[in-house]
Image 1 (cartoon, helix red, strand yellow):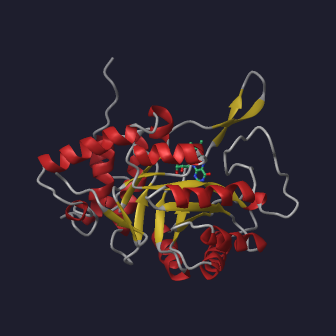
Image 2: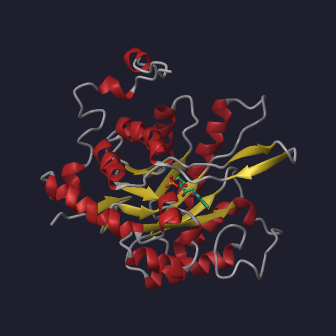
Length: 320
Ligand SMILES: Cc1cc2nc3c(=O)[nH]c(=O)nc-3n(C[C@H](O)[C@H](O)[C@H](O)COP(=O)(O)O)c2cc1C
C-alpha cells in the first residue's frame, strides 16, 4: 500500500493532507477530530496583531473554548500547549501581522508553548495611493525578518496571489528567513446588498476551479530554493491533491472542503489517494512530487502563458 509520509518545513508528516487555518482548528476537540480523520498536520487559526495590543478587548463568554478570532493570546497559548501534549501530528501556530512591533514577541511565546512551526499570514489591503508596491513588500520582509529572529522553529509565510512579481518576492522572503511558502491565502471580498444599500462582508467557500492559481505557482516555484511549498485554495478532491503534489507541493491544505463536508472528508480523500497511487504505480509521495512541475514538463512555458491564443480562440460563442 502507498506510503503517504511527507516532509514539510523539516517536519515528518504521516500524510500530505493538512487542515489549514480555520475555526475547525480552533478547539482541542476539533484538532482531535482532524487527527483522527487522518490530517498529517494542523494549522491553528491566526492570532491577529490587533489581539496582541496591550489594550485589546478580551471577549469572555460567547467564544467558548475557541482560540483565535479575537479570543486573545491566553486562550491561544493554552490551545497550543494542549494540542502539543495531545496530538502526535505537528501543530503549526499562525500569526497575522503586517507591521513591525511588540506583537512579534508572541511568536517566541508560541514556540515556548510547543508549536512545531509557525505560519505567518501577512496580507493587508493597501489602499493608499502614495504607498508603492516596493514599500508594501519592504514591510512584509521586515516583519518576516523580525519574526525569524524571534523564533528557532521553522517559519512558513502564507501569501496572497496579488503581487506583480511573485517569484521575486518569494526569493526575498526566503532570504528574509522563510522556510516555506503557503500558496495562497484567500480573503473574503465585500459584496453589496443593493436593496439595503449596504456593504456586506461576504465569505464564500472555495471550489476546485480555484486550484489553478496555486497549481501554477507551485509548479513555477518547485525546487527554486529548496523550501517547502504548501498548496492552499481550492483543494477539495483527490484529483486536486494529486495535481498539487505533481506540481511540486509538499502538502495539500484544506479548509473549505472540511467546512463543507466535515473533518471525515480527509479520510475519504486519503483512501482515494492511496488507490490512485496504487493504480498508477507510485509507492511514495516523493516519487510523485514535482513530476509535472515547471522544470519537469517538456513545455515549461505552459505555466507562464496568460493569454494563450489557441485557448482563447477555442472558446466560441454558444449556439442558439
Ligand atoms: C471561516 C474561515 C476562517 C479562516 N481563518 C483563517 C485564519 O485565521 N488564518 C489564515 O491564515 N487563514 C484563514 N482562513 C483561510 C484558510 O486557511 C485557507 O487558506 C483558505 O480558505 C483557502 O483554502 P480552501 O480553498 O481550502 O478553503 C480561513 C478560511 C475560512 C473559510
